[in-house]
Length: 114
Image 1 (tube, helix red, strand yellow):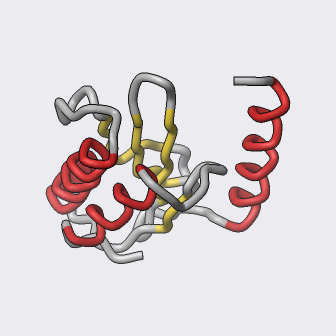
Image 2 (cartoon, one colour):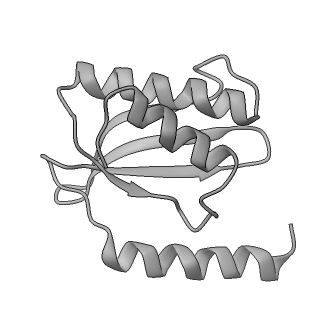
């Protein structure tokens, strides 16, 4: 990836984070997409603690739309086990399209509301 592309995504990410904050009752679902996997965390920003985390490696899912769906279902399952039902969605500067959209929809189907 070019430096300019990374800088633009980081700028979008900062703009989103200026408005989106997670709490203990409504944590922030943060997404990171790399070339090899997707990582998802539910974060309580008031204390700076990760409550739930999952990756496509852990879900044994490929880096595709289907893999993102598996990851969304896994994070929703883990969140329910941690008694979390409502979240704030943080797309991390990525477009709400493709794998990010599939992950969000699968998390909604798994019982998370946002």
